[in-house]
Length: 331
Length: 301
Image (cartoon, rainbow over all chains, first blue to last red; front, side, top):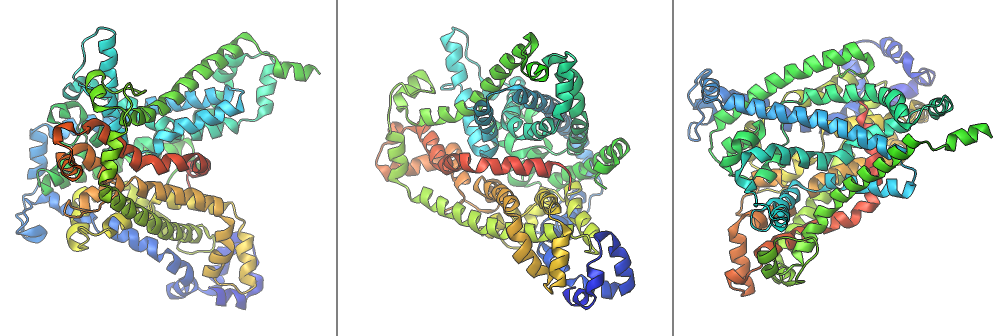
């Protein structure tokens, strides 16, 4: 690339917009294009190799979903069973439970999460003490940096039947202690609260930046017109955040079938079967089928279902983004 | 004069919003801090007090016994620290370099293949082979079982980080690249000598994202590093201490403290403090880089 440009310095100096024309002048032969871009291609090579190995090579492995994998026969000689694994997943009700749990949790995460993030961003913006704002933002951001192992341990600190803070409190006020780790009905609340606790500081940063981008003249004008703080939030700040919200919403809806393995696994524990009804998501099921049950085919069947279903969800979400704000669409 | 007065006029609803705001934000900020203090408090509480009163923010009966036990047999912690520090250092430097290089190349308007390669990378977030094929690949076909590379390599980069880098590089005028090329510099040299020094804030942000990923790594370690390995990553070590009875038995034997006298609960918390400490200490200095990165990276590249 450098050789060819130094040969035609005047062309290289033209603006970026003229680049296609320049390329055309140089000739359209694919080989010459390859040579012309060789350094930049080489610079991309490590990343390309990375994604080929760790993302693309496993994809054909989803063939496992259609066989009865056993270790001795390996991938290529295990019996082919068509859709039997999927039929089993549907018949046992596992697939429905996993889909429901994964989607329901994610919807709550997305909707409640964004609502809380927006509220925090707006409140932060209304506060006057810079010192307080800075410290509060740093503290709210802190849980995002902690490993899920530690978060699981913190949850145990609070929820443990014998020693937990929660039961200590309940005993102190004379109430009966709760057996959290064997009661599936409390877990949706625990998981959602932990999620909000961990992710709000992180998520609100985007909204906070958006609020800060609001033109101060508009705000001042509204104050001169006599709008009070609530009216300002209702009629200026919230509408201003709406596009950001819609875009973030649609992006996260694209991932509605992907669960947060670390969160669920460390909170619930590896083998707590009594909680599966309300806490088992696709990721934890696949993990168990790999590490505990050694049922590789069943795990792959669920993964394939997740990827295909999720792919169409992303396409639909992107189609919506494209219609609402074309410049934000992914492809 | 009039303008100034309206700007600072504080009506009832403003006061209301501020009071609620200070309350809500203050409460939430405290809620984010207290759990960590709870872990520290519990780690400093005597086991007898825990058995009687449960976990408490403030130790009722102060004791450093748990730390004594943890440090009496420090071999595993120190080993895990070395492993995690090594993986974090090597992985962050290598990953950062590759992410920066790729992000720059993909942002060059005159790079013919930029859209195709961008999509090639982005597609991996849309469709994936899932855990089982990934596991078989790393474990059997790449033969990285019980090899630290199995933890190091998958954490090097992510499409998200490359997109973030692209957004950062976009703020550097292309004219800089152009003029350097007129002066006869090659693409890699331009990247190394001109672009890289200009993107230090971006590199700090992305580097911290990669580093925190490695520091908190337990998932790949759990998948690929079997218990046969003496030293695994720090967080996986913590996970083992929290969940497995074997570790407790070993430390009982090593410290000559009978099993029933071992401060089981406070030991878990003490290990957590020891494993998390450096992050908490570094946190105040590094968090602003993250805030900047998220603001830039959140907008799609």
